[in-house]
Structures are given as structure tokens and as C-alpha cells.
Image 1 (tube, rainbow, N blue to C red):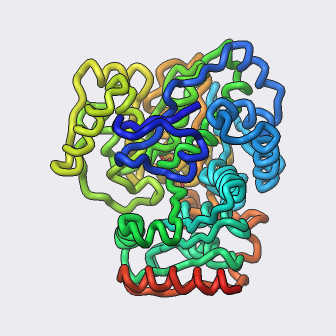
Image 2: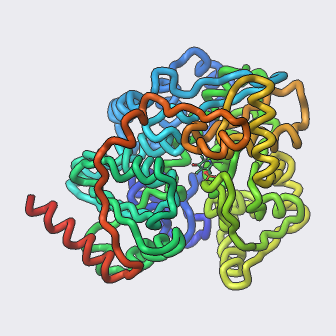
Length: 467
Ligand SMILES: *Cc1c(COP(=O)(O)O)cnc(C)c1O
């Protein structure tokens, strides 16, 4: 299996190169050169497997020759042990309506389901090559802790995570800063999330710095994350009757990574009737699916901060498919988007996307109403991201005979204030986070200044090599 760029100007490479590179050299995103395909018999055979065994079957064709089968098996088995025993429970919440709980990993959000695998695969590939890497990322909250948990104590990796000082919740900050592994370096920047992201981009754009310290990214454009996320769509599908019955999914969406994994599952053979793209007030995707025009707006802060995004980077992968894999056309659209803040697809292209996708958006008041309503109906507390997904599928569901699966992307205790505002009930901190408020924190506060951050990274790495 080889991967090509959505902008059509990069050589095809194998999974391990995609894993290390993240972004393609032409600025595009990697996608499989051809989609592998699971036959109905192969999907049928998934039904009785546990999550780990199913994950190996689903990821194998995407990994290809890059990892030997026993190595992939070992990495998956070890990753699974980082989760609760019931890794991805499926819960009934209504009439043929289900919740897929993806918050049973170390940081209680669905990003663990990709990053636990990614961290181990990255370490494996680096060690095999005799290389080391410095993972650098910016976070507005959830991604940072999931990346840190994935990379902590890995021999070949140093990880630096920048967060905006005072602008992440205390739980989110402590989930990062109380990890005291020697290879983990937390930095609080005197600035906003955008400042953090600009600093990271600037470090990657500095070739001397990038090459000297072997910078690597684990952000959501890395194909390996998509590959690991395809797994739970097959997991839920197999439980609800695939390949003989179709399933539908509703996905709380920010960067379009998670819902693109659902699309990928469809492309490789999972029978899916409908995919619902759920957004909060940041409704650029809802507007796109209504009009065929992508027009950028201002980001507003909401109760579901991991979806406070205007530019969904993974959308480029869907665009590539909608444009019949014409990389030049994708590159032109992305250039126009960068320069003018908008681009459009033809009505035929939009219809193609709308055959599978629906989209809907909900503001904070509607989100709180949904949290309260579900709690009254079922006694379940859901986090605000999850609530947006449930509201969206209830508004857009096409066929009640098809099971609808709403993805629960975070544990309600991660967003306890919002849940309490909506219901009057404060969700208790689960076992994994007990003691979080007593643990010692460790982080460096730095100015929003590229030189200061680069000097810090260089100093820390020199100390680590000397140690
Ligand atoms: C990251 C995140 C999302 C958005 O996922 P994308 O893959 O970026 O679309 C939704 N909910 C939660 C809780 C998240 O952490």
C-alpha cells in the first residue's frame, strides 16, 4: 500500500514514511493510492472479534508492508491495554439509536483511540531505523494530553507541547503538566492558541531547526491517525449487523479527521447509509453542505471547544475524492481558500457529497438543552461535543430503520461545568483522574517569542542527550 498527496505533486510513499512525515512535501495530505477493499465475508468475520483483533484486521491493509504482521499485532495489543477493559461500548439511547463511547482511554477523549497506536508505531519505526524524533505540537486542550500520554517514556521520542497560558481548563492543563516523564516538556505560552500554533508552524518552517532536531508532528492530518480511527466504525458496524445491514453515524466535527475516517470506512466496504457532520456555532461545514461554498468566518468560543475551528484541515481529503482525485484542482481550491477565504464546488460535486453526508449546527443553548433532554430520557450524562452530535442526528436522520450511532467523543467529567449548567448534576471524575488535583505539576512559562521557544527546545534536548 502506497500513499499519494491530495495535491498530486509528491512521490508515492509507504505507510512508515507517511507516519514520519505527516504532511506531504507539496503541502497536501496523504491518502491511499487506491482504496483497499473488505469483502462482505471479511466484514462478517469481524463480528465475533475483540477490539484488538478487529483493529489488526482493519488496519493491516493500510499499514501494508511497513510493519511486519507480528509487530502490528504487538503494537495493537499493547495499545489496547492502555484502555478500560470495555474499550468502545455501544449503548442504546433511543429507538434504534446508539451511543458509541470513545472516552475509555487515558485522557478520556476519542483522540486516545488514534494516538495510543500512533505513539507506539512511531517509536517502533524510529527504533528500527535507528532514528530519534522531536514531536512538537500546539494544543487548545484535548490533543496535547492525548499526544503526551501516547509519547511519554518512549525511547526514541521527545515531546514538546505548547498551550496558551491560562486559557485551557484546569483539568486539561493538569492532564498534561502532571506527566513528569523525562521526555515530556510542557510549555505555557503567554498568548493565545493561535500564537502557539503559529510558533509551531514557524519551527517547522525553519529548515535548519527542523532537520537538526528531527521535528515530527502527530496532528490530525497524519494518516496513521485516520487509519486507527477507521477501526471503531467497523467495530460498531459489526455489532449492529454489517455487512447485512447498513449503519449510520453522527460525528461531532472540528478538523474533519474523525468523520473522514468514517468516509474511509465506507470507501473500503462498510455499508453506511448516512454520515452526519455535527458542528457548534462554528458552522463553516454546515454552510458548505448547504451551498457548496466554503467561506471562512470568525472563530467563536463555545461549550465544545475542540470544535471551535474554521479551517477543517482534513476536509481537503474529501475534496480530493469529490474532485475525482484531481490534485491540481485541489491545489487551486486550497490556494484560493488561503488567499480569498473561500472556494466553491460545482452542483454536481456537491450532490455527490450530499448522497452520503448531511450537516447541522447547534449553539450553546441548544447544546445544553440536548444534554438535559438526554439525561431526562435515559439518565445518561453526555459532554457538550457529544450532545451536538446527538442533536444533529435527531434533526437529520433519514431512515429510522437504519441504526444511528452517535459518537461520544469525550467523557462528561472533562466538561463538568457545562454538564452541571445543563442538568444541575456534576459528573464525577472517573477513576483515571482521581488524584489529578493533588499531583505535582511541571511546566515552563515562555513569552510568545520564537527565539525563546527555540532556545528552550535546544537547551532541553542538549540536557537530555547529555543525561
Ligand atoms: C478533537 C475533538 C473533536 C473533533 O474531531 P475532529 O477529528 O477534529 O473533527 C470532537 N470532540 C472532541 C471531544 C474532540 O476532542
